[in-house]
Image 1: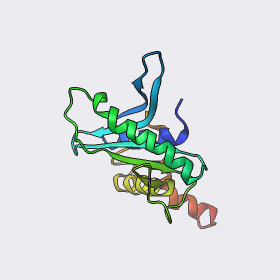
Image 2 (image 1 turned 45 degrees about the vertical axis):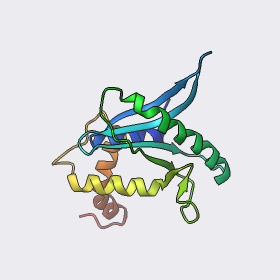
Image 3 (image 1 turned 135 degrees about the vertical axis):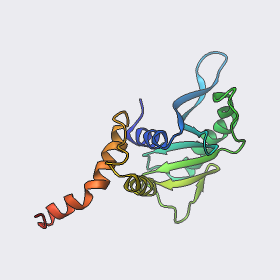
Image 4 (image 1 turned 90 degrees about the horizontal axis):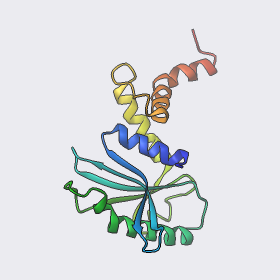
Length: 168
C-alpha cells in the first residue's frame, strides 16, 4: 500500500505524461520473495527520461540511509530495464531519494542517487500547476492529490485574503 508521499510522487509524474510503475517487486528469489521493492519508476517517452524515485518519510541517520539507498538504487539499475522489456529506454536512469525530514546542507546525494527534499517537489508541482491553471487544464479526478494542489495553487490568494480579513 503506497504512502502519501509515494502517491503524490506517482500522481505528479503521471500528470506530466510519464508511464509510472509503483511498488514494483524486482529480483525474484529461487525459493520465493524478491530482492527489493522499487517505489516509483517513471518513463516519459516524449522526453526519453527515465527516473527511479524512492520517497521516504524516515528520520534515519545518513549512514542508515546510505546503506538502504545503495541497495535500492543498485537494484534499480539492475532490474529497471526489464520492466520496460520491448520498449527502447535510455541507458541512464535518474535516481532520486525524496525526503521529508532532511537537509541537503551536507548531503546532496545518498546511495548513488540525488537527494531531493519535499519542499523542492512541492515547489515544482505548484509552479507547474500555476502555469496551466484550473480553467485551461484541470487535473483529472484520478489524480486527487495533484488535483487538490491545483486548486490550492489557483485559490491561494483568495484563501490568504480571506484569512487576513481582506475579502470583499
